[in-house]
Amino acid sequence: MTRSILGPMETAGRPNVFVVDDSPSIRERLIEMLVSDGIDVVGEAESPADAISGIRRLQPDCVVLDLKLRDGSGIEVLRALHPDFPEITFIVLSNHADLPYRRRCAAAGAAFFLDKATEFGKITDLIAGLDPMKS
Image 1: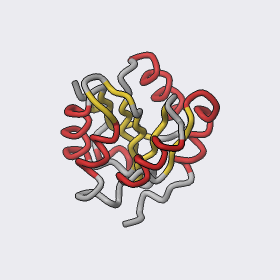
Image 2: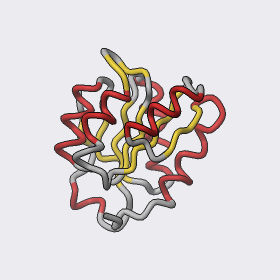
Image 3: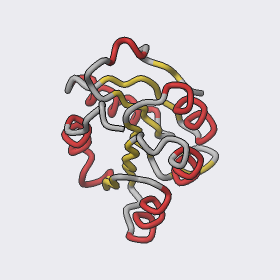
C-alpha cells in the first residue's frame, strides 16, 4: 500500500523523496533519517505495484529504492518509470550490491547504487546534494 506523507505544496525548494522498501522497519528508519536532515518524504511503498502508482501520482524529485521487494523487484519499478520520468533521480539502496545487480539497475535508469550494509548513512548527504529544480 502506498502512503502519501506530505502534499506537493509543502516541499517547495527542497528535494522530495519517495521511499520504496519491503521492510517496514527499514522504511521507518530511512524516513526518520531523511526528515531529521530536512528532506521531505512525500510517500512510501513496499511493493512494485504500489511504488509505481505512488511515484506516478506524486512525481517526486528522488526515489530511494530497494532491489528486493514484496512481490517483485526494484528493477521492475525502474523499467516502468524511468522512461516516462527521466527527471526523477532513482537511488537504489540494497543489500544485494554485487556488480551484476549494479549494472542491471544502471541500465534500467538508476542514477546511484548504495550498499545498504556499508553506505546506508550516505543517503541523506546524497539526496541533500540533489537539485530539485533540475529537469
